[in-house]
Length: 39
Image 1 (cartoon, rainbow, N blue to C red):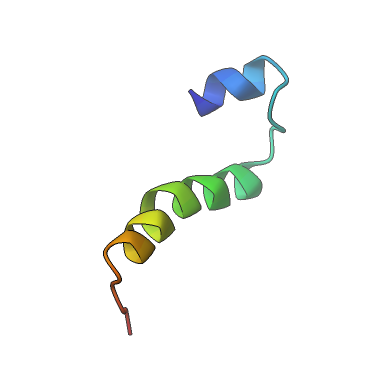
Image 2: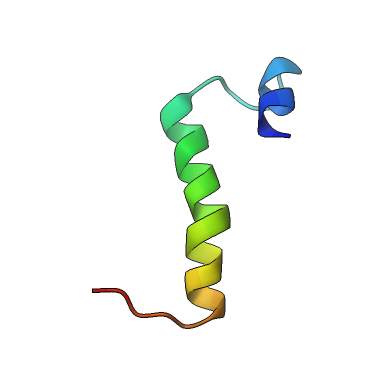
């Protein structure tokens, strides 16, 4: 999905930015949803 966005020009081809976006969606959302405290 994200690759298609980049190919279609809807998202920048910036690996660092895209990696942070995926981390926020996959990890940070779950962390907040489940109220997990990580050391």
